Image (cartoon, rainbow, N blue to C red; front, side, top):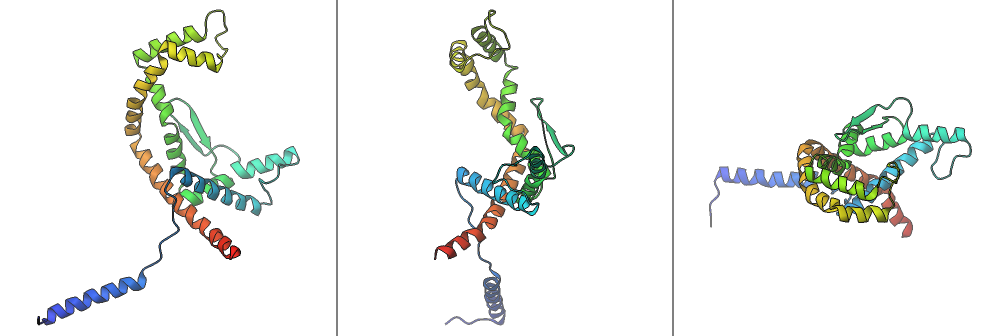
Length: 233
């Protein structure tokens, strides 16, 4: 039978105590977050809508019924989207500028979910426009310029006003005949990969804040889910 030294006994006792202490302070896991992107998007939309409804209700307003007067509509829009100059603004590489308020119930809901609505605004707008940025970069490619010129000749002959948009069927035919669709399909993956590398910091922020929001949304939905279960029983 092995003989235990005093040091070994103290070490074993310390380890056992640590395990016991760890067991005492262990907490239950938080509410589960859906695994699929579609279910995650639905969870975020539901949580955001619930937070907005709660905020509007505190102001005596609701989205459930349409406003009865123009003044009531203006009051609802102000409460929902905020008022005054836009505090948040971001000009994209495409040249377009996106702006938003930091007040209003929608902004408050996003602050609750994402923790930092300014960082979320910049990250979301950037990520949502990655493909548009990649498509804008394609315009500098000679093959794309040549295909676009052929498309313009096909879809907008001299007899037609340049401002007139061709019907979808004509546009689709011209994309095939001009080779524009093939050029875009060839160029877009590489351009999108380049853009994603350029915007890596914002992509990381987007993932981090979205993960935080999903956990918060799951926590917010947990009480109502539990209550529904109790009501059913």
